[in-house]
Structure formats: C-alpha cells, structure tokens
Image (cartoon, one colour):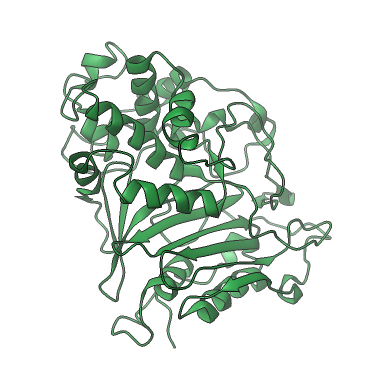
Length: 392
C-alpha cells in the first residue's frame, strides 16, 4: 500500500480485458450531489472523467468546513449489477490508517509513556535491527531507513495476490520479511516511505498499553468521536454495506474483483475501513487540536523533505503543497482495489474522496491534483494549467 503522494497510478496492466466488464460507465448518472463549494462543477467533472475513462468503477467525494458542504458520487457499485454508487459507502482507507496510529502514539507521548526521541530499542528490545539508533520520531516520519516489507515478493499489498490474499499474517512475520533486506540508509540520513515503520508503530502501542492497537484506536478516537462507520477488520475479508467493489488487472485473466482480502497484510500500516464522512470528522478533531496537546500537534505537522516538490511528510501526516500556494494536511491510501485521500486546509475546509478501482492505468494524468485544485484553489490561479495539473 502506497501513501497516496503521487497521482492515481498503479503498476502493471492486464494482457486482456475480461468479457462483460467493459460497461459504458460514462452513461451512469451522477448521484446525490448536495450543496456545493464554488468549484463543485469542476470536482464533478473530474469525477465523471475518472469513471468514463474506466479508471474507476466509482468515486465518492465530500467537501466541508466552508460556507457550503457538498457530497456526491459517480459510477456504479459493481460491474455486474450496474447499481449506482452510494456517496455514504464504505471503503478500505489503506495508509490513511497511519494517521490514526500516529495520533495514538502522540497521545501516549502526552501521557508520558514515551518520548518522540526515545530509541525504539527502549520499548521494543530486540525487535528492530539497529533499534538503539532509530527514534520513535524517525519511525513516524519515515526517516528510519527500514526496508518496506510490502516491497518484498509475496507481501505486495497494491497488486493481485491470488489465493494468498486470504492468508492471515502476523506483525512479526511482516517485520521478518522486511529485515531480511538491508536498510535504505542510516537512521535520519534520508526519507523513504516504508510500511514497516507503522508495523513497528502498532507494536509500540501494544507494548506501551498492554492492549491491541486497534482497541486503543477505538477507545481513544472512534468511540469518543462517534465514528461508527470506521472499523479495524483484523482478519475479516469483507466490507460493511454499502460499498462499491474494486477491480485489478491480473495477467492472462483480465480484471478480477479484488474487493475482499485478509487485511492483516496491512495491519497498523493500512487495515482500516471508513467513509468520507467519518474521515472528515476525524480530521476536524485532529487538526482542531481535540485529540492531542498543541505541542504534539505541532510536532505532527513538522515535516521533512520527501524529495518531491508537492508534498512533505510529518508524523503520520502529509502536507500537500498546491500550485495556488495553498497547503493542506492529511493523508492518502492506495490498496489493490481502492484509492482514497483526506485533506484539510488551515481554515477548516476539507476534501475527502475514495475511488473503487478498475483500469487505473487509464486515469488522466494528475487526477488527484486536479481534484485538490478544484476543492481548494480559486479558478484561473497562476499555477493552473502546469504539466500534470488541470487546465482550463
């Protein structure tokens, strides 16, 4: 699972398209538009383009925090029935899970259970190679250098895994796969996105609290905020209804339904399920300072260079830098069948979206950037029309 920093792309294409999946998705009517921000028609146009290109079977989106709130969907819930996508539908949020996990660890910092500059070895002795030189902060901002376990053959999250998709994995096994490989760099000497860091983060929560990391997220975040449509499925391969189904290319087989799989392969790096409404409420509470001290929130938003011009990474939180000069905070997630993102500007305006995937290789260039631009930037701003950005 990737963090969603890039455009909506996925490696690999199928050699054939399965008969019966080539539906005319462009003809599906728009669903349940409510209200509208100033550029809601452009948001709608970008959503429709993703569906008409068959990059996604469906996309749902929501704005909030401004004078007008808006939610809507485009596309179908599944390719067999052709029923409309529900704007309140559930989806796998992938690496957006990381922001929940980081929030719990920062709450534990506030409680004095650990410090961000503690070596990992102090709390997880013998668990992480070179753990005495890797700090909790470096785990949370991906400067630890630890190899990404989901880059190991057989542990890929963002591609079809055949019968292995129903296998149960344990955190120790995921770390073992990562630690068979050399680190990318010495701790603090670079930046590399690695799901391994948040397997370690989940284990830190469990060691410090004596509880399952998921139970801590429920008790500290989900229950107090009434995020009743957000869940940690553990080994349950299903999704709550309503939800749209997602598809992925499989060489020699066309496109397969990849909606259901055992989410233990992602664990604290990306197992959660939610809705756009719940993710919006979570961001409101988080960035509004309701979930941790002001000092911890500032630490969370203190970013490091990722090597890209349009983003920087904090502690389980991404800063997206838009061409109009606006910066928004949030995260993104890419699974084999879903891509999603949650973002919020300093003034509280939000944009949250999720797409159930089909032929993602067909996605227009800069699809995510186009959505963020329409959600946050004024029309005809100086950056509009740059390569990879939406033009008029």
